[in-house]
Amino acid sequence: MEKIMIEGGHRLNGTITIGGAKNSAVALIPAAILADSTVTIDQLPDISDVRHLCELLKEIGGKVSFQNNTLTIDPSQMVPMPLPNGRVKKLRASYYLMGAMLGRFKKAVVGLPGGCNLGPRPIDQHIKGFEALGAKVTNEQGAIYLRAEELRGARIYLDVVSVGATINIMLAAVRAKGRTIIENAAKEPEIIDVATLLSSMGAKIKGAGTDVIRIDGVDALHGCRHSIIPDRIEAGTYMILAAAMGERVIIDNVIPQHVESLTAKLREMGVDIEVYDDQIAISRGTKPLKKVDVKTLVYPGFPTDLQQPFTALLTQAHGTSIVTDTIYGARFKHVDELRRMGADIKVEGSSAIIEGPTKLQGARVKASELRAGASLVVAGAMAHGITEITGVEHIHRGYSHLIEKLRNVGANIWSEQTGAEEDETARVGD
Ligand code: EPU
Image 1 (tube, rainbow, N blue to C red):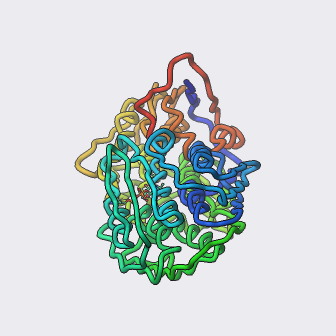
Image 2 (cartoon, rainbow, N blue to C red):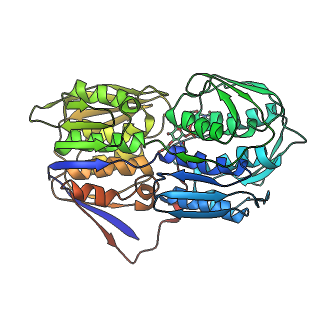
C-alpha cells in the first residue's frame, strides 16, 4: 500500500502545469465508441480513471493505445459486450458507457458502481433520458440493461441539473433519429468539451454550455483528433495550495474563466492573484487571511469538487467561515481527518463551520475520496511536522504526478510503500 508523506511549512515558489480535465476525459473516451473510425485525444491526464476506461474499451473490442498523453482509439471492431461486473465498478464515470453503447449498438449492459462515497448519487435522470429516447431500461442484479428498437429524438427536461445526465443523454442522442432537446441542462465546461469532440466526429449539437442543448441525430459518426481542456479542479486545488503556502506560484495551462468563482473567493480572503491568458499567478503575501462563506453551486458557481481543499485553507482564515455544499450535502468525510490535525470544524446539516486560525499538526490521516484527499494534501502542506496520508489510490484518480509537481515548487512531499493490503472499501471512483 502506498502512503503520501508531507512535511509541512515549506513555502512554494515556481510553476505548476495543469493537465487535461479528468471529468472531460472520462466522457470523451467512451464517446469514441460512437465513431466508426479512429479517434485521437491529445493532452489526456495520466490518471487511473483514464487507464481503467482504456481497458474497458479493449474489453469490448476497441484497439487502444495511450502514449505521451495521447490516446488513440480504433472503435471499428467494437461489439456490445455486456459489462455487468469487474472494471466498471472501479469508477463512477463508467456510466458514460451506457449512453455511448446505447447510441452505437442500441443496447448495453453496464454494472452500477457499488457503494457511494459522497452520499447518495442517483442516476435517475440519466435513465429518464434514455427512456425518453425510446430505450427500455431495467436494473437486473446491480447491472443496468438498456435495449431499443430504434432511438428517437425527444424533448427531455432534467429535474436536477446534472453533468452526468446531460452528457449521457448527448451520447445516446447524437445517432438517434430526429431532434433531441435537453432542457435544464448542466453548463459545465466539460459538457462543451464533449460536444466539441462529438461535433468534430460529425454530430449536430447546438447550445452546449447553455441550459438548452439541441441535437439533430445523424446516421454515422467518423473519427477525429481532439485536444482536451485543462482541468479546472486540478488548477483550483493548486491555486488553493498556493494561497496557503505560496510565495509566488504560477498555475500554467488554465482557462481563467473556468476558475473565476475560486479566484473571487481567494481575493475576498486577501490573496493576491494576477490573471493572464492561460496562467494565474498567486502570492500569499504576509497579510492574514480573512474569513469567507462559500456555497457550492452548479457551474459557474463554486464547484463542489473544490470545497474540501478550500475548507482546509479556511482553517487558517481569521474568524468563522461557513462552507455549504448544495450539490452533495454529505460530502464532509474530510472534516474528521482535518480535526485529527487540529482543525476546529463542526458539520451542521450540509454546512461545515470553520473557526480559524488554528495551528495544524501533522497526523496519520486517510483519504476517503479524491477531493477529501486533496484537502489533506493542502492541510499537510500547512501543518507543523509530518502528515501521513493513506487511501492514496483515490488521489491518483484525479491528480497526475502530484508529488512531482509539488516537489518542483518546493514542497517536501514523497511517497512510501508499506506491506499492508490495499483497503477494499476504497474501490469506487468519482
Ligand atoms: N443527481 C440526481 N439524479 C441524477 C443525477 C444527479 O439526483 O440522475 C443529483 C446528484 O445526486 C447531485 C447533483 O444531481 O446532487 C449533481 O450531480 P451530477 O450528475 O452533476 O454529478 P456527476 O455527473 O455524477 C460530476 C463529476 C463530479 C462532480 C459533479 C458535480 C464526473 C465523472 N464527476 O458528477 O466529480 O462532483 O459532477 O459537479 O464528471 C470529482 O471530480 O471529484 C467528482 C466527484
